[in-house]
Image (cartoon, rainbow, N blue to C red; front, side, top):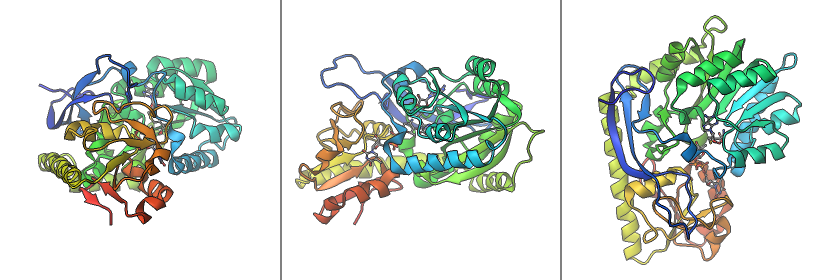
Length: 406
Ligand code: DWN
Ligand code: SAH
């Protein structure tokens, strides 16, 4: 029987993407070592409603010195985290000698603004390469995985935190109990633990199955986050829906005696109940929708190829590993992936081995069609490449359904 990583109750598996590689393991073309694969499948806990992967990939395989994702690669995300920092500076961090800890600060996209404001901070970031980039911006970084013992060490050295913040990282961490024990040790009595992650409600609505890959272990809802928080002695005191990364929720967690939950919490809980986000019908419907997208996408790409259309992809996202490996899309259907990240360029995409090239090569020459893997940055990317459309090129999107943008 599959059991919940958090509460131990039974988990019902509802979708299986088969054998998948590590989503951010871009290979050197001459690398002949065996690729690591695991079974990517998702289930929902029948007791606490937490949606979760059924198989766990060891963390050091995913997050290490060569982790290639740089958060600052998108103007939208730089703006988003600049605003986030500003908001904290004006509220939670406006007191006397405040201190903020960020779990998974990556290249310092958020903390660099906190550093510039002269506020005490610490990023806890196990991936040394991106952490070094954050340091070059003046951000203080501890190269460790955040967990109970790390949190205690941080508290001993720096004192308690007013805010513990984390973006797109808590959902990457299976061992939530250790995280909450750490938060309990590190957070001031009236402090707040704020994290934002892809929202299961948006994934269901947009059928964005490519949010499911090795690094994303949990798919949160207000219902499942509140249950987890309460299990570890905290409460969910605020929620805010965000438009970034295809739809996320920012959860605020505090000690029950410290803060009163806002009306937004009750509203989102009620909405989730009404939508039935983890009912058998919803979950099986999601799985059927995903299989439909796979069939439609493969049929479209094969048809374009048969008619002599040249197809490339844009954005070597972690998400795209699920798309290519689940659909069986290789270099025969998509000749290259254009991406602005130096650490991914000149490499082969995991599993599919589609070559990744600098985004400048998109225009050499423009293809007939471009499959937009970075659909969450559609506005920014489409605006950067006006000549592609003007010359008759067409973007292909696959969520919530496969379509060619006219
Ligand atoms: O949770 C995670 C999120 C925050 O980031 C991580 N587990 C891994 C990563 O996921 P992803 O790779 O799916 O994230 P993005 O932000 O969708 O990746 C965008 C990709 O597209 C990057 O490789 C950069 C590239 N890009 C580009 O080539 N030109 C992006 C933009 C905006 C551009 O203009
Ligand atoms: N916060 C950034 C980065 C998200 S990518 C953003 O929103 O864009 C996920 C990051 O979490 C990676 O940089 C990875 O190294 C880090 N990470 C993974 N497990 C972690 C852990 N246990 N503690 C701290 N950081 C972790």
